[in-house]
Image (cartoon, rainbow, N blue to C red; front, side):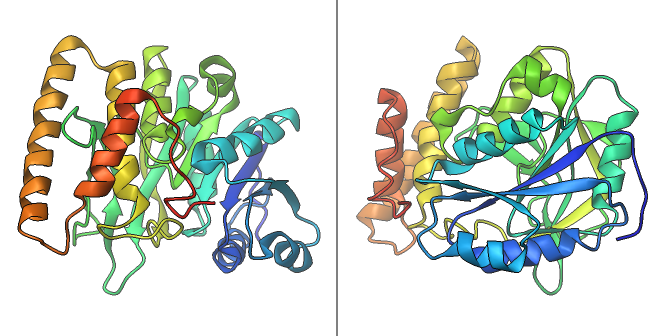
Length: 309
């Protein structure tokens, strides 16, 4: 790593759950950064595949914290955030272990954070790690439609699009840099979500306190996407998408936003019910229905049944 120093202490928190090779690849990508003034902290989220031992032998100098159970994206990262702040961090980057930053990613975000005293969270352009490459997404909008949020640039073929820095509703959680000032004021990630929507929730809470959420397109990283939970219509993502949309709406929506959400959410279930009755293979009705019910009731997700324990 070349030495391009900043005056801010940066800690990169990487959450690992049964995917130690991804974490190794992620750390290797960080070793290629064009700044060296940062440290890496890995939080192993209750892995059952020997990840912690493999990571310790591969990176003996790296700090690794082991959780006894899977605390989810929010809970696992909160463990890392607390440790980073306790160690004096001014900036904390939450980096998915299946996200691989370009060499100037950290430096670009750190420089942007230092130029805005009201910055709470910063994120960059996320490139889907496929050939030919395309955008995974740029930044997020809170819409209060069926999924509450929309990712701008989702699957766009032109990776040069969305090239202007701007204040946004939220930045994508696979690589989100947070400032100490905002973390101490806003608090940590809401662990009720477990996984998904907690990034939008935290950014909204920060904006409500007058902070800025900054999209910095020159900071780029490649992302495999949903590698821990898998994809498709039988993925836990379908459950959490429904459950956490309901939780988010209950927590933040105005009356008009709640009505809009209910209409869009209901129409989505009409479509899923039609797929179910027609026995379509890509039907997500059972998972979405279970998620919606748990969201309304405020139930903890059934981790064992979802394959997340």
